[in-house]
Length: 473
Image (cartoon, rainbow, N blue to C red; front, side, top):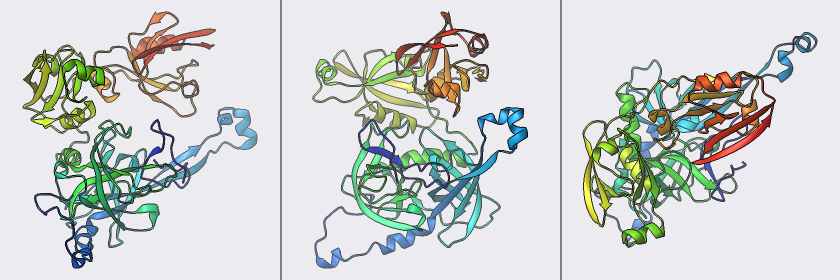
């Protein structure tokens, strides 16, 4: 199975999926409950994981998703072509395969978002071979988690016990349970290799459990459990050169999973998280030396949005965030993860280094404000044809991982096969100017894109850098 390219060298691939038609997408135990020690006798070495597997296997399911897509030839729009060659587009079925975990006796199932993304038909197969139709009740692309609910059921299902991922330690034994390659429920074992992996590039919240338990395509959405039979993570990706297991797998910590479960149980189809309203950056060796730190750690406040919780709490540009509610943070990803798990309402206590001394500020936990996005799909013949654009609000900037102090018009989607896709426009690009005219709203961009131009001079901002390009009309 081919692997996807990655900026990190070997490919980080989602441990999902075998697509039948489309190209394949490959992307602890509780220390308080069990004493951590090495085996002391031959008898202990011969101990089996079978009791743990028996306890949790019925809670792990297989997830099958599908959608019907049309393969439409571009000449189908020509009536002469349709007359002579027929006008009926061919239909194909795209399928994906993954795993899931029953987290509520009512039939609520946790899986990965990439298992069901863009799919409209979902089936779930239980460990006892029964199959049920399922509906997607919540998708959270930022954490790559999704919640399914079994349809038309009245019985109670075996929900897995939820653990605490913060108690995991490197070296703890764990089991990975899922459906790799569609062969059926499979159990592998290994140890926790790391507990706070960042810079992986899979989701917005870069904070993963790393394990050497064998994880392969089809394991996505499956359970990572400790030896007490508690769920400690959702298996989501592998680090691989070949597309198969190389002994480096990643799981979303169950404490993040809890937030998504709670949203679904509360009847919401979205996950509401608190908004800080500040752009954070990593601490370099030079910054560490300037602050007199023993090692580079923490999250440096780069900018603070006006009227944001950060501004009202008194955070300033140049502050160094070192802790949240007494838990140290090593980098901005670690802070984002900890902050995103806070319940709405109340306050978070942020430890800050400022002018050589540590202070504590109280940040209110509230949702990010949104505004009229005025989304528009550009259809006119222009370089933007096939791009969906919207006015940038704080909420949209937060979703796109853009600086919350920015304003303008953002590209939020680029359709496959469109002119915009062919010219290299991407989701998250901020359109600043077209042919010398500043773009203040999505309406401005749609109006200008509808004009006939021999030359298009376009300025966008991408990854914080302005880019100017020229296209022929």
